[in-house]
Image (cartoon, rainbow, N blue to C red):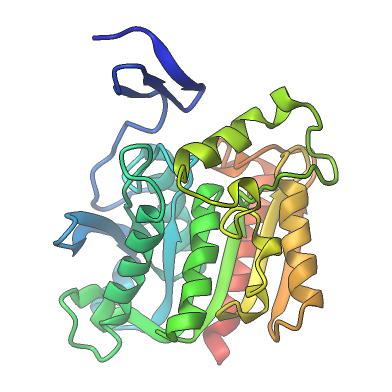
Length: 316
């Protein structure tokens, strides 16, 4: 076993010269079931037998027993495309809390990670998960929780960091394939980047190394590098066709990615996209702070804004 490191993306992942991949974070898991804190119940399902891909479903027990229709959220975890899963402690806790607060049904999607599975695998997997969920719209899908409780007139896609990047790509693909009318898109500290420095982004090579290097790791076949529309969303000439009604972008003041989130929101407002985009900034906070300190005041405010957005569709 080689100890020679080929690529080091600490604190996330290391890749050794013999091809071995060492994930430094995001490998712990928790089982599904009843959460005594939130009261939410969860279970794991397979959404793609071809790729053996799964997701964790969440719902309030009262909605299941009563067959009450609730907004449906497709949630995509972050982790630089290379770590984490829906089953990790931070994401399991976050989805339990979000489902309880918003009174929604959620599908937290597992997808193939890089470098073993370069993009577009993650994009394709999450699109497949949305298609699997939408197949329940007629009430005769394989998963009874979705048949009974999901309101397919109020479908949202959300993600944080790299998961927000994927959520954006899912919404773009939805515009092309017209699978369903998405009510909204929630992008939390979205991982967008570009070749040229903007705003408060680091100017030096060392400061830009991690976000730039992770993209090259995730998509080594990209012909446009850091100006690929998949990572530099505002460079996409098709952005005005984004396939959803509303967008909420959540950014954090101390996050080096925040200016890309702001620019995304501003560009949507200027380029002819017919929906409504809004932004909420957490002062004094860093990237995905709410996952690691969910009890802090700014995390509560971020949760409140997200819940309000998810509930906007309840009255049609």
